[in-house]
Amino acid sequence: MNAQGKEIITNVRDELEKNSDEKTKNSAFRFFKEEVRFYGVKTALVVRIAKQYFKEVKPLGKNQVFSLCEELLKSDYSEESWVAANWAYWMEDEFETADFKTFERWIGRYISNWASCDTLCNHAVGAFIEKYPEYLGGLKGWTQSPNRWMRRAAAVSLIIPAKNGKYLKDIFEIADMLLEDKDDLVQKGYGWMLKEASRRHQKEVFDYVVEHKATMPRTALRYAIEKMPQELRQKAMAKS
Image 1 (cartoon, rainbow, N blue to C red):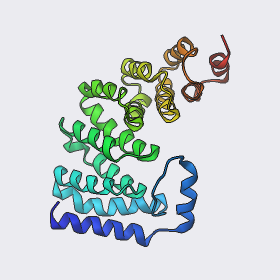
Image 2 (cartoon, rainbow, N blue to C red; image 1 turned 90 degrees about the vertical axis):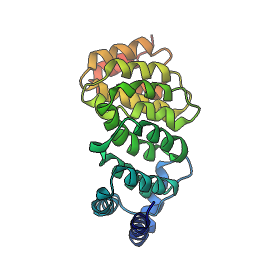
Image 3 (cartoon, rainbow, N blue to C red; image 1 turned 30 degrees about the vertical axis):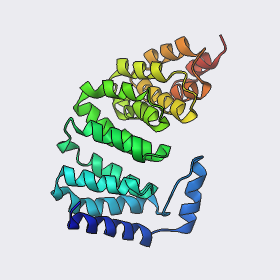
């Protein structure tokens, strides 16, 4: 990281610190079971700060931007993770195939809660997959990781493509691989993926849920059917 990059990181952190609020900080903790770190900055302010400094980092090029993202991710502060995830996403026009390994490393080393996982994966990783769908196989590999966030990432990286009706076959394959996962946050992740897929493929997702409901955890099942009509939800929840 060059001197300009270091200065930008320092300025971002100073801005976050300056805008921190104890009430906001304390209210954020109730959404997490795991240990998390917050400055206590309201989302709208984090968005403003991220956009403000992205104007300075984008001209540095993707490699330098990704280096700055990694520096922010290392801190484990949720607001810094949000900035990093969005800076990475906003560089999507410059994505190249080698970035998959970068995203994989970030998830494995730095992601420590569901919010950071989802912010990075819903947008940056999802956009990468849409640009390079041949890496869907890489997501499927993540389902076998001992790291809960890597397994959740395999599903939540497809939230936006699923919502748009894409990759249904791959979505079902990932759901198959995560079907009996014992971690509730992984269950919620793939259930959410199926829910978004149901927007365009309601019958297929309903049939999948009914076929697997004997082994699918109820947490995942409830997420998957959330957008369906009440009649279908009742059928899916009914005991065989």
